[in-house]
Image 1 (cartoon, one colour):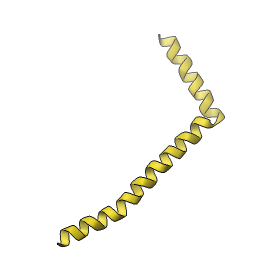
Image 2: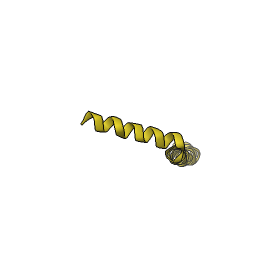
Image 3: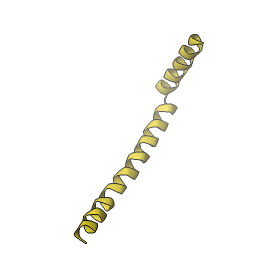
Length: 53
């Protein structure tokens, strides 16, 4: 029974951090993709990919 309590406590404390992690990663990725620097880097990357082909 003690093991289940420890397991539940670990789950209760780690699951919110996992959710927050994915929210932050999505927000950061979205912010970078919409910035001027992100658009420039994406265009440059596409240009490099076209030269490879």
